[in-house]
Structures are given as structure tokens and as C-alpha cells.
Length: 248
Ligand code: 8X3
Image (cartoon, rainbow, N blue to C red; front, side, top):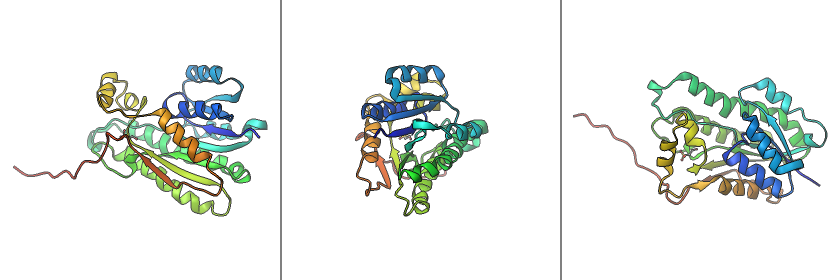
């Protein structure tokens, strides 16, 4: 039986790599994103196993429409909630609220709306949900208040959802990566390629393929196994200590 995955944020990075990984594994992939040209390119590459859907995670009505797919494309057994972004790392007191709101709507509201809409079918098929959180859910850093909080939401939403889904056979996982070299920093900095290159320089960061392979592993485990949360970092990334401010 061909299995079907619904992957958000598939025009780049982890979403795009996941679309390729699942298509290569024989799955049908419904791939969403805002950039139609990129979606079309991916769909040309993956052929009949890919259904591209131009979709903005902030448009709840469009999300609910997209979730009403019928026929074989409606047989969704896996939801990969990958779409998400980070606002610039300005301290909250200096931040532009529109950028924060954009991240909150995409990372939380859109994710919940889509998950809610796809849940009846996922329950019927004893499917799985993989949510992309972040190490920022657990480890705070300056300028990360809204991003980190939104990813903590994703982590806790995943864990609480397991309670709601007890007895249904539906699996839920929170994937929490650290540094992955994607367009993440380019988006966060408003397109500053030099800042993005500088952040990843000499780091040997994780790749989108690393995370796609992890999602593949999680999703293809035997059905009695649930990975609740999985935190990953490149070896070169670790933790800093507490900051202490001294007068004088
Ligand atoms: C982003 C993780 O480590 O690049 O989700 O800030 S990190």
C-alpha cells in the first residue's frame, strides 16, 4: 500500500529534504509552501508521487481547505509539521511586533489549525504526526523569546496531544534540532547571506538531509513505538553558561 505524507514548508530545507526522502522511500508526498515556482520544480523532480500545494500557514481558511483533499491524496497517514520561521534576534524591547506575530501565527496557530483538521483521518488510519520544534524550546538565548517560546509550544503541544490521542494508535513526535544549515538564518536576518555564512562557518552544522533521515526513521519505526521527543545538535554546538550582569 502506498503511504501518503503531508509536509508543510516544503520549498526549502528540512521540508524539501523530507519530501525527497519520503518520495524515495515510495511514499506519496503532499508538499506545501508559499513559493509556487519552487513547489513546481520539486513536483517536476518527484513526478507523480508529489502533490504541490501553494499555501501560507497564516491563512487558516486555506489550510482547512487543503486538509479536505479527497481520493488517494486524502489518505494521509503522516503529517510533518515543518513550516516555521524565526523573527530576527532582537531583544523583545527592540523587536518589530509584525515579525513576531508572523512567527507566532506560522509556528503555532497554523500548526494547530492544520493538525486539528487532519486529525480525524490520522486517527482513522492510525497515522503519525512529526512536529518540528527546536533546541530553542529548551535552551534560552538573547533575542529568542518569541521563537523559543513558539518552539516550546510545539514541544508541549506534541506531548499533550499524545494524551488526547491515547488509545487511538496515532503517534506524535517532537523533533528538536539545533544548528541545521538551511535558509533558516537567511529568513531570520531578512536575507543577509553574509550573516548566514558567518554563522555556519567552520561549524560543520547538521544538514536538512540529516533531519529528513531522522524523520524517516521516526515515521517508519514499528507501530508500537513512539519517540516522544528527540533533540539533536551538531557535535560542534553545545551550551553556554548563565549570563550575569554586574554594576560598575
Ligand atoms: C534553531 C536552532 O541552534 O540554530 O531552531 O538556534 S539554532
